[in-house]
Image 1: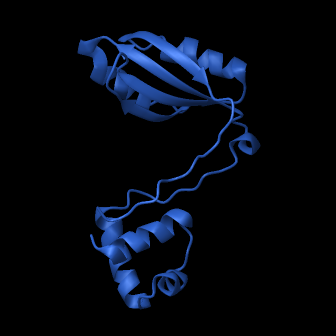
Image 2: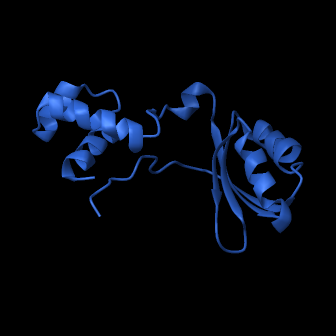
Length: 148
């Protein structure tokens, strides 16, 4: 990847609906060049195009970050089971006292409680978990990338 590839990615992260002509203007490269590079990036680097809604307005008013300890021999199964839950948007394997970190969404505290107690705690291999309710979203964005 070179500077042009990074510039294309940066434009897309700011606005995934940007047109090729607008991106070309911002980057200072011909439309055909940007189009060809974008096709290559879509095949090799870009996983998907997405957006970030106002979660409150779509009915997901509460978010929790949950750290989970797993039975070591069931760690892979727990990761897979958590990944399959619709209410779980992110699953990370982490180092330290806990094994996994997940992000969970619900409409209210009651629904979040049901998700934790009826779904997550019942996954075979979950030993312990600690929930943290998100009180305020300060920043929810993608990182700025630069050439390494």
